[in-house]
Image (cartoon, rainbow, N blue to C red; front, side):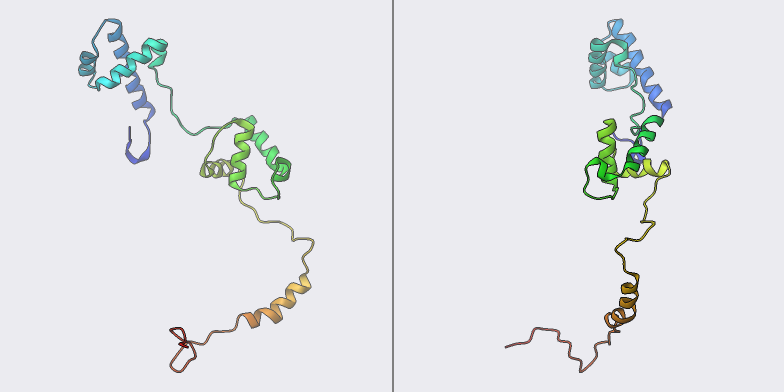
Length: 179
């Protein structure tokens, strides 16, 4: 079933649908036929068939609402554990370098808690709990600041030579030279 604007049912609409299913259960118990129940409740016969099957298998609980599917949530304890594991770093969890990517965090959440998140959902979860993308606070130990300055002064100006616009008589060819 599709819902407008890509959303699901509100709690009120979910409760209203549950009331209809429970009314159908009352009619099942009274011996009502699927076609009659469907017409009276203004639903499809297939829905009534499905509800009757669920009612036979699990009783009234079988037709009750399961609640909002929503996004999977981690408890406060799980969030705290996730933060501790993130602070240990990717190397401690088997990755070859010290970069946390969203895909890696998503995988870690799945390994630790058996909960599936999308990459986008992982980003939202981290953002909601104060995590953000970072750049290294320190420079690499191997960095040679003198070599960087020398490169900026001597090499970069040569690389950044201004291009002259191609005009008539320039040596720019538009087709390959013929032999």
